[in-house]
Length: 510
Image (cartoon, rainbow, N blue to C red; front, side, top):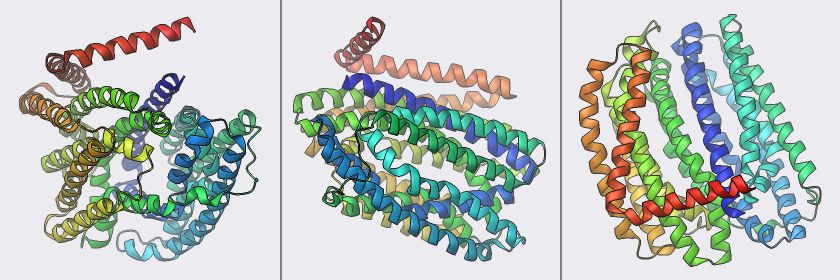
């Protein structure tokens, strides 16, 4: 049952990320073409400031999910009720603080960008509209999400979000094509998000009638939330600092540069999201294995997970390194300032950063599932310090390149640390195997990318040829990596194939 739910979560999360990726690529192109790079940069900038405000969540979700693993595994419903009741109370407090911060952002943010957009009322209304999602999360959705994720029912949230994203994307494109106000486009998206949250609430109320969200709260279950918050702060600094720094510290064309950054980042974010969706789908399964003390199961499962995940990561970023530059060229062809979007250094740095970040996911899955927030907080702080220090030193002379170098430096440190930590504390004796997997996949991918970059300059002339080249290149690189891994670890490869066949047969029998 655990494997079945893990597979279902991973599949639904992967489909969600594909949907989000498609939406994230389509919408900005329509948005920039109609409203221009400054307005697109404005929306991206506000969104990043709001992401900092989400720190008021204070680690509630992560701490609550980890605390629910054991009572759910043993069917202790009274304990489950007490934990989700505490989550509800904490989320209400966070929601009140988030609303107060939203008011402050509405008042003061326009002064940061008024040199490029003078309509202060427009900016303030945009801030308020974009804050709606956060308010809905804290006052309404958060407590339900904690329960579903801990009970390996995250796929429910994913399916509802897929439907909502499709509807939102279609509605937004129609409104943009009708030349409606950018405010109306974002307001409709906020309403659809509210309806999506209502659907999640209805599902939980129907399928968990025995869970009392107003039971006596077990606040002790959230003892680790401050350590979890520290990790969230670090994640926010490392993953969301770039746009904020560009908005505040670039002397000229800050919003236009933010727009350039977001075009590259939407591809990097989509790819990272696809990979994280697989990791997130398996997190609760590993959490229950760790909580049950099944060490042999953990060792075997993690080895298979790492083996196939590294293969997928290198195939994904090897494809990105070759396909991103021509994609951006075609994507920005209709922009009035499209030429400023074509930058090879950004291709290299976004690819390197994404690869370094994703390689930590297998180890990070174990750290999160085990709830080792307090044990790893100092390491997380060091990552944030490296990111901010390098970015602040290089942003003025190098612009976007400077902040990306800061991001890559921090990712290199933290990924190395996560691999070492997980090998030491969860799967002893696995470090040599992990390093060998990184080395062989890295060598194959590096050699392939050097060849692919030369070939794509001659082969791509439009969207049709880009799409054909993307399919051919991705399949060729994936096949090469599969062959390499089969030759180096044939037993692991065959075990994966056998496990996949067994899963398919069980599904057919069911």
